[in-house]
Image 1 (cartoon, rainbow, N blue to C red):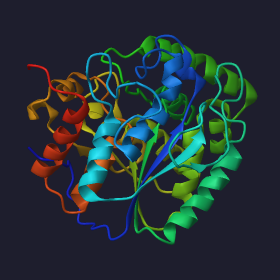
Image 2 (cartoon, rainbow, N blue to C red):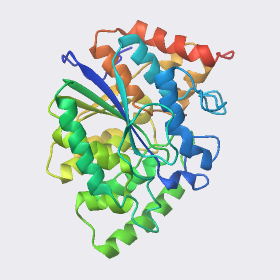
Image 3 (cartoon, helix red, strand yellow):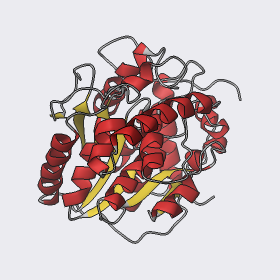
Image 4 (cartoon, rainbow, N blue to C red):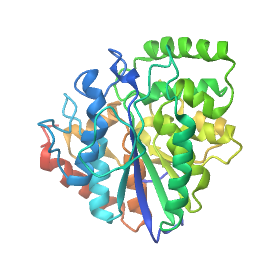
Length: 341
Protein backbone atom coordinates (compact mmCIF):
# COMPACT_ATOMS: atom_id res chain seq x y z
CA UNK A 1 0.00 0.00 0.00
CA UNK A 2 1.36 3.43 -1.01
CA UNK A 3 0.49 6.36 1.23
CA UNK A 4 0.88 9.10 -1.42
CA UNK A 5 -0.02 9.07 -5.10
CA UNK A 6 3.00 11.23 -5.94
CA UNK A 7 6.50 11.34 -4.51
CA UNK A 8 7.62 14.50 -2.71
CA UNK A 9 11.11 15.58 -1.74
CA UNK A 10 10.20 18.75 0.14
CA UNK A 11 11.29 18.66 3.79
CA UNK A 12 9.54 21.30 5.95
CA UNK A 13 11.78 23.18 8.34
CA UNK A 14 9.16 25.42 9.95
CA UNK A 15 5.67 24.18 8.99
CA UNK A 16 2.26 25.50 9.97
CA UNK A 17 -1.12 23.84 9.70
CA UNK A 18 -3.79 26.53 9.31
CA UNK A 19 -7.46 25.61 9.62
CA UNK A 20 -9.92 28.13 8.15
CA UNK A 21 -13.34 27.88 9.81
CA UNK A 22 -16.60 29.23 8.41
CA UNK A 23 -20.28 28.57 8.03
CA UNK A 24 -22.68 28.85 5.15
CA UNK A 25 -26.38 28.93 5.92
CA UNK A 26 -26.82 26.38 3.15
CA UNK A 27 -25.84 23.74 5.71
CA UNK A 28 -29.15 24.45 7.50
CA UNK A 29 -31.15 23.43 4.42
CA UNK A 30 -32.72 20.08 5.42
CA UNK A 31 -31.02 17.17 3.70
CA UNK A 32 -28.09 19.11 2.26
CA UNK A 33 -25.22 18.67 4.72
CA UNK A 34 -23.95 15.35 6.01
CA UNK A 35 -22.29 16.95 9.04
CA UNK A 36 -23.74 17.61 12.45
CA UNK A 37 -26.64 15.99 14.31
CA UNK A 38 -29.24 18.06 12.43
CA UNK A 39 -29.34 21.06 10.06
CA UNK A 40 -28.99 23.72 12.78
CA UNK A 41 -26.40 21.61 14.59
CA UNK A 42 -24.21 21.68 11.46
CA UNK A 43 -23.33 25.29 12.33
CA UNK A 44 -21.43 24.11 15.44
CA UNK A 45 -19.29 21.52 13.66
CA UNK A 46 -16.29 23.80 12.91
CA UNK A 47 -16.19 24.97 16.53
CA UNK A 48 -16.30 21.44 17.94
CA UNK A 49 -13.72 20.12 15.48
CA UNK A 50 -11.37 22.97 16.42
CA UNK A 51 -11.82 22.11 20.11
CA UNK A 52 -10.93 18.49 19.42
CA UNK A 53 -7.77 19.45 17.55
CA UNK A 54 -6.54 22.05 20.04
CA UNK A 55 -7.62 20.38 23.30
CA UNK A 56 -7.78 16.71 22.36
CA UNK A 57 -11.42 16.61 23.44
CA UNK A 58 -14.68 18.54 23.19
CA UNK A 59 -15.38 20.51 26.36
CA UNK A 60 -18.01 23.11 25.43
CA UNK A 61 -20.84 20.56 25.27
CA UNK A 62 -21.49 16.83 25.57
CA UNK A 63 -21.21 16.15 21.84
CA UNK A 64 -19.19 13.16 20.66
CA UNK A 65 -16.79 13.55 17.74
CA UNK A 66 -18.49 10.82 15.70
CA UNK A 67 -21.33 10.55 13.24
CA UNK A 68 -24.43 8.67 14.33
CA UNK A 69 -22.96 5.52 12.82
CA UNK A 70 -19.76 5.79 14.86
CA UNK A 71 -17.56 7.20 12.09
CA UNK A 72 -14.90 9.47 13.65
CA UNK A 73 -14.70 13.10 12.57
CA UNK A 74 -11.74 13.87 10.29
CA UNK A 75 -10.64 16.38 12.93
CA UNK A 76 -9.50 13.37 14.97
CA UNK A 77 -7.08 12.50 12.18
CA UNK A 78 -5.72 16.04 12.09
CA UNK A 79 -5.33 16.04 15.89
CA UNK A 80 -3.47 12.73 15.86
CA UNK A 81 -1.06 13.99 13.18
CA UNK A 82 -0.38 17.20 15.12
CA UNK A 83 0.44 15.07 18.17
CA UNK A 84 2.66 12.73 16.18
CA UNK A 85 4.60 15.30 14.15
CA UNK A 86 4.43 18.26 16.54
CA UNK A 87 3.48 20.81 13.88
CA UNK A 88 1.73 23.97 15.16
CA UNK A 89 -1.95 24.53 14.41
CA UNK A 90 -3.59 27.92 13.95
CA UNK A 91 -7.27 28.49 13.27
CA UNK A 92 -8.83 31.43 11.45
CA UNK A 93 -12.43 32.41 12.14
CA UNK A 94 -13.46 33.44 8.64
CA UNK A 95 -17.16 33.68 9.46
CA UNK A 96 -18.71 31.47 12.15
CA UNK A 97 -22.25 31.55 13.52
CA UNK A 98 -21.00 30.83 17.04
CA UNK A 99 -17.99 32.22 18.88
CA UNK A 100 -15.30 29.53 19.12
CA UNK A 101 -14.03 28.36 22.52
CA UNK A 102 -10.44 27.91 21.34
CA UNK A 103 -7.98 30.63 20.28
CA UNK A 104 -8.47 31.83 16.71
CA UNK A 105 -7.24 34.57 14.45
CA UNK A 106 -10.56 36.40 14.04
CA UNK A 107 -11.44 38.12 10.77
CA UNK A 108 -14.69 39.50 12.24
CA UNK A 109 -17.07 38.30 9.57
CA UNK A 110 -20.41 36.50 9.42
CA UNK A 111 -21.57 33.16 8.06
CA UNK A 112 -22.16 32.88 4.35
CA UNK A 113 -25.76 33.60 3.37
CA UNK A 114 -28.01 31.64 1.04
CA UNK A 115 -26.75 32.36 -2.51
CA UNK A 116 -30.16 31.68 -4.01
CA UNK A 117 -31.57 34.76 -2.31
CA UNK A 118 -28.82 37.31 -1.72
CA UNK A 119 -25.06 37.91 -1.85
CA UNK A 120 -23.49 35.08 0.11
CA UNK A 121 -20.35 36.92 1.30
CA UNK A 122 -20.92 40.70 1.12
CA UNK A 123 -17.44 41.41 2.54
CA UNK A 124 -15.55 39.00 0.26
CA UNK A 125 -13.09 41.71 -0.82
CA UNK A 126 -12.25 42.59 2.80
CA UNK A 127 -11.79 38.92 3.71
CA UNK A 128 -9.52 38.47 0.70
CA UNK A 129 -7.45 41.50 1.77
CA UNK A 130 -7.24 40.15 5.33
CA UNK A 131 -6.12 36.83 3.89
CA UNK A 132 -3.38 38.62 1.96
CA UNK A 133 -2.17 40.14 5.23
CA UNK A 134 -2.12 36.69 6.83
CA UNK A 135 -0.20 35.24 3.88
CA UNK A 136 2.51 37.88 4.23
CA UNK A 137 2.61 37.32 8.00
CA UNK A 138 2.95 33.54 7.63
CA UNK A 139 5.72 34.01 5.05
CA UNK A 140 7.92 35.66 7.67
CA UNK A 141 7.97 32.59 9.93
CA UNK A 142 6.83 29.44 8.16
CA UNK A 143 8.49 27.84 5.14
CA UNK A 144 5.64 25.36 4.63
CA UNK A 145 1.92 26.07 4.94
CA UNK A 146 -0.86 23.50 4.82
CA UNK A 147 -4.33 25.07 4.78
CA UNK A 148 -7.35 22.99 5.74
CA UNK A 149 -10.96 24.03 6.12
CA UNK A 150 -14.17 23.20 7.90
CA UNK A 151 -17.29 24.58 6.22
CA UNK A 152 -20.39 22.38 6.51
CA UNK A 153 -22.38 22.78 3.31
CA UNK A 154 -19.25 24.03 1.58
CA UNK A 155 -19.29 21.49 -1.22
CA UNK A 156 -22.44 23.17 -2.50
CA UNK A 157 -20.88 26.63 -2.51
CA UNK A 158 -17.86 25.01 -4.16
CA UNK A 159 -20.13 23.64 -6.88
CA UNK A 160 -21.59 27.13 -7.39
CA UNK A 161 -18.12 28.64 -7.81
CA UNK A 162 -16.75 25.87 -10.04
CA UNK A 163 -19.75 26.00 -12.38
CA UNK A 164 -19.64 29.82 -12.40
CA UNK A 165 -15.98 29.60 -13.45
CA UNK A 166 -16.94 27.37 -16.35
CA UNK A 167 -15.80 23.96 -15.10
CA UNK A 168 -17.68 20.71 -15.63
CA UNK A 169 -17.76 20.01 -11.91
CA UNK A 170 -19.36 17.44 -9.65
CA UNK A 171 -18.53 17.66 -5.97
CA UNK A 172 -18.26 15.25 -3.07
CA UNK A 173 -20.40 15.00 0.05
CA UNK A 174 -19.85 13.85 3.63
CA UNK A 175 -22.82 11.51 3.28
CA UNK A 176 -22.68 8.01 1.81
CA UNK A 177 -25.58 8.97 -0.45
CA UNK A 178 -24.94 12.39 -1.92
CA UNK A 179 -27.88 14.82 -2.01
CA UNK A 180 -26.79 15.69 -5.54
CA UNK A 181 -30.27 16.53 -6.81
CA UNK A 182 -30.73 19.08 -4.02
CA UNK A 183 -27.26 20.52 -4.70
CA UNK A 184 -28.10 20.89 -8.38
CA UNK A 185 -31.37 22.67 -7.59
CA UNK A 186 -29.59 25.17 -5.35
CA UNK A 187 -26.78 25.77 -7.82
CA UNK A 188 -29.20 26.30 -10.70
CA UNK A 189 -31.04 29.05 -8.82
CA UNK A 190 -27.83 30.69 -7.57
CA UNK A 191 -26.26 30.74 -11.03
CA UNK A 192 -29.41 32.20 -12.57
CA UNK A 193 -29.13 35.04 -10.08
CA UNK A 194 -25.50 35.85 -10.91
CA UNK A 195 -26.20 35.50 -14.63
CA UNK A 196 -28.85 38.18 -14.29
CA UNK A 197 -26.34 40.35 -12.44
CA UNK A 198 -23.64 39.77 -15.06
CA UNK A 199 -21.13 38.79 -12.35
CA UNK A 200 -17.80 37.50 -13.69
CA UNK A 201 -14.99 38.86 -11.49
CA UNK A 202 -13.67 36.00 -9.29
CA UNK A 203 -14.02 37.86 -5.99
CA UNK A 204 -17.47 39.03 -7.02
CA UNK A 205 -18.38 35.39 -7.64
CA UNK A 206 -17.36 34.57 -4.06
CA UNK A 207 -19.38 37.54 -2.87
CA UNK A 208 -22.49 36.29 -4.64
CA UNK A 209 -22.35 32.48 -4.39
CA UNK A 210 -19.30 31.43 -2.36
CA UNK A 211 -18.47 31.19 1.34
CA UNK A 212 -16.11 33.13 3.65
CA UNK A 213 -13.43 30.42 3.68
CA UNK A 214 -12.84 30.79 -0.05
CA UNK A 215 -12.06 34.50 0.15
CA UNK A 216 -9.65 34.06 3.06
CA UNK A 217 -7.76 31.09 1.59
CA UNK A 218 -7.48 32.75 -1.81
CA UNK A 219 -6.06 35.84 -0.13
CA UNK A 220 -3.49 33.84 1.84
CA UNK A 221 -2.44 31.91 -1.26
CA UNK A 222 -1.99 35.14 -3.24
CA UNK A 223 0.76 36.47 -0.93
CA UNK A 224 2.33 33.46 0.82
CA UNK A 225 5.88 32.94 -0.45
CA UNK A 226 6.73 29.52 1.01
CA UNK A 227 5.63 26.05 -0.08
CA UNK A 228 1.82 25.92 0.01
CA UNK A 229 -0.58 22.99 0.02
CA UNK A 230 -4.37 23.26 0.07
CA UNK A 231 -5.71 20.38 2.17
CA UNK A 232 -9.17 19.33 1.05
CA UNK A 233 -11.12 17.95 -1.88
CA UNK A 234 -13.53 19.73 -4.17
CA UNK A 235 -13.82 22.72 -1.81
CA UNK A 236 -10.12 23.47 -2.16
CA UNK A 237 -10.32 22.86 -5.90
CA UNK A 238 -12.88 25.69 -5.95
CA UNK A 239 -10.27 27.93 -4.29
CA UNK A 240 -7.72 26.80 -6.89
CA UNK A 241 -10.20 27.74 -9.63
CA UNK A 242 -10.60 31.21 -8.11
CA UNK A 243 -6.82 31.69 -8.03
CA UNK A 244 -6.52 30.64 -11.66
CA UNK A 245 -9.29 33.10 -12.58
CA UNK A 246 -7.31 35.81 -10.76
CA UNK A 247 -4.31 35.02 -12.97
CA UNK A 248 -2.29 33.11 -10.36
CA UNK A 249 -1.01 29.53 -10.47
CA UNK A 250 -3.09 26.90 -8.72
CA UNK A 251 -1.43 25.57 -5.54
CA UNK A 252 -1.05 21.84 -5.01
CA UNK A 253 -4.18 20.27 -3.55
CA UNK A 254 -3.93 17.30 -1.17
CA UNK A 255 -6.94 15.13 -0.40
CA UNK A 256 -7.86 11.61 0.62
CA UNK A 257 -8.50 8.69 -1.68
CA UNK A 258 -12.05 8.59 -0.32
CA UNK A 259 -12.90 11.88 -2.05
CA UNK A 260 -11.31 10.70 -5.28
CA UNK A 261 -13.24 7.41 -5.11
CA UNK A 262 -16.57 9.25 -4.82
CA UNK A 263 -18.47 8.30 -7.97
CA UNK A 264 -20.76 11.31 -7.59
CA UNK A 265 -17.76 13.67 -7.83
CA UNK A 266 -15.00 14.12 -10.40
CA UNK A 267 -12.11 15.26 -8.23
CA UNK A 268 -9.24 13.92 -10.37
CA UNK A 269 -10.74 15.15 -13.64
CA UNK A 270 -11.62 18.50 -12.06
CA UNK A 271 -8.05 19.03 -10.86
CA UNK A 272 -6.88 18.37 -14.42
CA UNK A 273 -9.44 20.82 -15.84
CA UNK A 274 -8.25 23.53 -13.46
CA UNK A 275 -4.55 22.71 -13.79
CA UNK A 276 -4.08 22.10 -10.07
CA UNK A 277 -1.46 19.52 -9.04
CA UNK A 278 -3.21 16.83 -6.97
CA UNK A 279 -1.75 14.48 -4.37
CA UNK A 280 -3.99 11.68 -3.12
CA UNK A 281 -3.45 10.28 0.38
CA UNK A 282 -4.51 6.69 1.07
CA UNK A 283 -4.43 5.95 4.83
CA UNK A 284 -5.68 2.38 4.21
CA UNK A 285 -8.55 2.60 6.69
CA UNK A 286 -9.97 -0.63 5.30
CA UNK A 287 -7.18 -2.53 7.04
CA UNK A 288 -6.75 -0.35 10.13
CA UNK A 289 -8.91 -2.54 12.33
CA UNK A 290 -11.44 0.06 13.49
CA UNK A 291 -15.12 -0.22 12.60
CA UNK A 292 -15.66 3.55 12.53
CA UNK A 293 -12.67 4.37 10.35
CA UNK A 294 -13.61 1.58 7.94
CA UNK A 295 -16.73 3.62 7.15
CA UNK A 296 -14.54 6.11 5.27
CA UNK A 297 -14.06 3.34 2.71
CA UNK A 298 -17.80 3.14 2.00
CA UNK A 299 -17.98 6.89 1.40
CA UNK A 300 -18.92 8.29 4.79
CA UNK A 301 -17.23 11.61 5.73
CA UNK A 302 -14.34 11.07 3.24
CA UNK A 303 -12.34 14.20 4.17
CA UNK A 304 -12.51 17.39 6.23
CA UNK A 305 -10.55 19.72 8.50
CA UNK A 306 -7.51 19.14 6.29
CA UNK A 307 -7.21 15.50 7.41
CA UNK A 308 -5.49 14.31 4.24
CA UNK A 309 -3.15 17.29 4.32
CA UNK A 310 -2.30 16.65 7.98
CA UNK A 311 -1.29 13.06 7.14
CA UNK A 312 0.69 14.40 4.19
CA UNK A 313 2.49 16.97 6.36
CA UNK A 314 3.37 14.40 9.02
CA UNK A 315 4.84 12.21 6.28
CA UNK A 316 6.87 15.10 4.83
CA UNK A 317 8.24 15.63 8.34
CA UNK A 318 9.65 12.11 8.36
CA UNK A 319 6.90 9.94 9.82
CA UNK A 320 6.28 6.66 8.06
CA UNK A 321 3.04 4.96 7.11
CA UNK A 322 2.90 2.42 10.01
CA UNK A 323 3.34 5.02 12.74
CA UNK A 324 0.86 7.34 11.04
CA UNK A 325 -1.79 4.60 11.10
CA UNK A 326 -0.92 3.65 14.67
CA UNK A 327 -1.21 7.27 15.81
CA UNK A 328 -4.63 7.70 14.17
CA UNK A 329 -5.92 4.44 15.63
CA UNK A 330 -4.60 5.25 19.12
CA UNK A 331 -6.25 8.66 19.28
CA UNK A 332 -9.57 7.60 17.75
CA UNK A 333 -9.83 4.64 20.14
CA UNK A 334 -9.61 6.96 23.16
CA UNK A 335 -13.12 8.24 22.47
CA UNK A 336 -14.54 5.83 19.89
CA UNK A 337 -13.92 2.13 20.66
CA UNK A 338 -14.11 -0.15 17.66
CA UNK A 339 -17.05 -2.48 17.29
CA UNK A 340 -16.68 -6.01 15.88
CA UNK A 341 -15.86 -5.80 12.18
